[in-house]
Length: 169
Image (tube, rainbow, N blue to C red; front, side, top):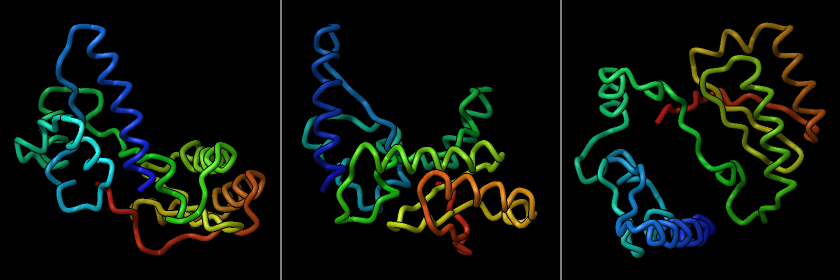
């Protein structure tokens, strides 16, 4: 339920700030694809009166990207950026140091030019998830060694690649 409690804090702050500015409505970016996911944070949003207009309009992520491209919005192809806490297994305590470690290690992948990445923390092991189209790139020895060395320098003893491609959502 950590996402639930986190969203309560975040949305509480947003509601307060909106009220100070004279607004009586706060919205989020949940969309129709999110409806079937386990999203405790969305439950917190619903309970707090946060609206999800993209979800209400039954717009999927692909439809939103298509509309964004048609409107020439710079965010049309922006990668999904889930909270870093989603990289930590349920039941494992989250600390600032752990999130910074994950962020440093994941930044190595972004800096190497990968289009979509997730680095899952499994204690001493980092499990890399990338888009399927990047599998050939990570197979290149020089890039692979650069990534391995960088992630190990971030504090992981082992670095593994998940052969299940990351689902772009």
